[in-house]
Image 1 (cartoon, rainbow, N blue to C red):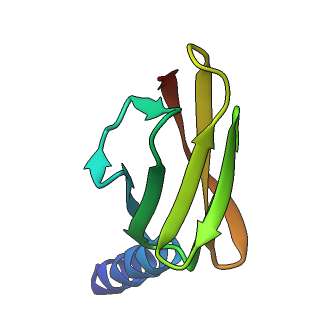
Image 2: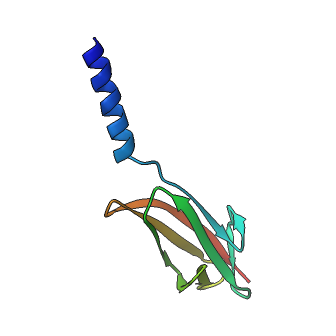
Length: 106
């Protein structure tokens, strides 16, 4: 019984180390849960998180410029939807973390 408990504890701690939890937060212009992107004003995206060595951002109907402290997001056509895709790099593997949709406004 002691051997089983010892083995179970080792197995669970190994799985925890292997499957590190990923936490992240995306903000547009310092606001979480943003639902719109402005065509006439600057949109600045920041992402902070743990559990990944790196976060990658791509999108559709937007252009993304990398800066030291975040990314400038320039949306496409007004009234359409823009998508931003977030991918994390963990232990050399890419993990799709989420897709965020935004309505483009004036």
